[in-house]
Image 1: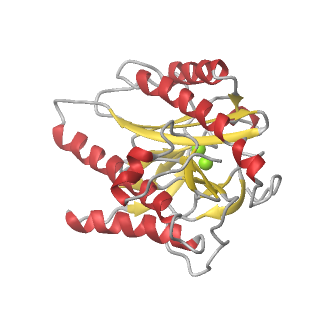
Image 2: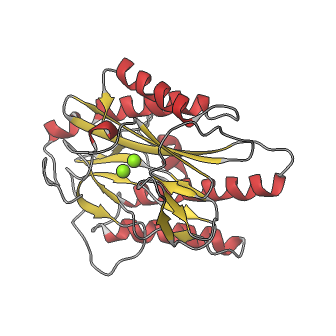
Length: 282
Ligand code: MG
Ligand code: MG
């Protein structure tokens, strides 16, 4: 974090270079998604994601993070983010968040999905986890959609938190939003300024204007947002053991609108509910 390599506001030429790594990231996550089934290990998912990124002409950018040797992070159940792929076998009812990124021609994509595995023997647990994932994903789209009207970055966090609060109110439940981990700018580095908070902050933050490239990534839990890092020095898990979800996309703000680089439709399907139509990067 705090790196500044390609600047907060990219040139139109730089913005165009964000598109291909976004699609390579999507390819990696799609390959992962098909393998998120009970009986598979998170290591198998990791290998499939890497192969797909390479086939798309990219390379894993997670492997460029000092000390990290994998293409994805796989965080299961009470694990929120930064889970390390390995011999863990996925089980029915698991809630699995996969985070993945690709670098291609010097530029980066970063995206995460959550999948809940079916388990007919525990319908209530599965329903609770599906609801958590749906609300987390919805809050991501709410945050992305807010870029169309927001003047400053703190309005994105307000949109995310507001969405989660509203959905929680409908079922009289208060979800936890992690505050120790946040989204970020993205460009020639996967992690650049500015920090993107998933909640309301007093400081306005940077101006929303063409050239901004953000990885927005709400991390939401059923219970308390207090977390700790496991003995592997990477995996972040909830203190109360409650389920967690993580969704992320990379989005570009350009002269004619916004475009989600890590979705092949630019985010059209997710943004439709918010009355926003993405426009391809000119
Ligand atoms: Mg990520
Ligand atoms: Mg990220």
